[in-house]
Length: 128
Image 1 (cartoon, helix red, strand yellow):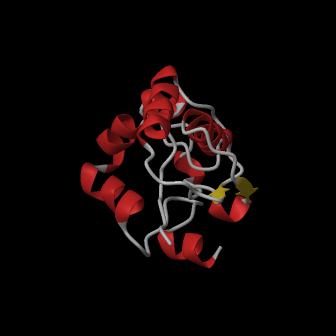
Image 2 (cartoon, helix red, strand yellow; image 1 turned 45 degrees about the horizontal axis):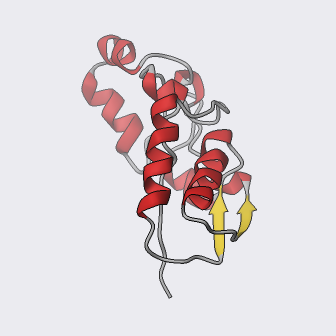
Image 3 (cartoon, rainbow, N blue to C red; image 1 turned 180 degrees about the vertical axis):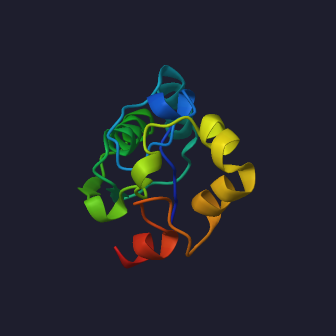
């Protein structure tokens, strides 16, 4: 058995450097290309694919399956959605760092137990 983990391609908001979280944005043109290249480089067959129910993840999965000529069972679940960035959602990451400091933004983004304002920390995501 083999487990392959793939993150979604660049989203429209990744491209704009915005906190995305639960916001259901699609892939950017670059994200589509990233997913296509991933699919073309797949050298293993898979029977089941798991994805969040966010468009960027679902579309990445579909593109990878198409480009790798595979037709797995696809299971989508909101339990796999990206973390909720709460009040930071839709805001520019650099502007937030300018206001709150880079150290605080890194705590919100990378700490296991620190929540962004009205958002989820990684423990919350794991429990979900």
